[in-house]
Length: 117
Image 1 (cartoon, rainbow, N blue to C red):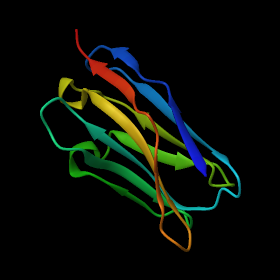
Image 2 (cartoon, rainbow, N blue to C red; image 1 turned 90 degrees about the vertical axis):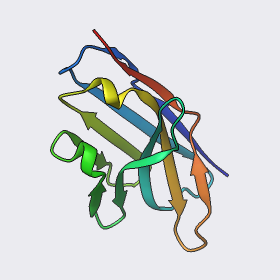
Image 3 (cartoon, rainbow, N blue to C red; image 1 turned 60 degrees about the vertical axis):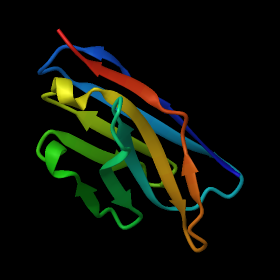
Image 4 (cartoon, rainbow, N blue to C red; image 1 turned 45 degrees about the vertical axis):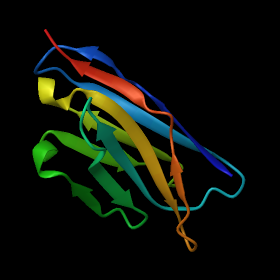
């Protein structure tokens, strides 16, 4: 079993920055991709950014040029650098991982990001 634990959320003013971290632990961590999703009140959960084992990345249009996803070499930690934050970025951010081979999905517990003056 793999556990994903997020950290780094909080309250920030519009235009500010935050860095989210997610650490994967457990037996035989072997993830093909690690992603960040977010869910705002009353809205569906949406993919924010994805990084796969070869380093390729994908971003939602709404965060391109503002957010950057990165990972460590072992692919057991993922980070989300969020710059130029807007009130619309307010949401609970979830770390998500997909196991290599069998495709099992793992979710973190979520971390709140609030962008407000």
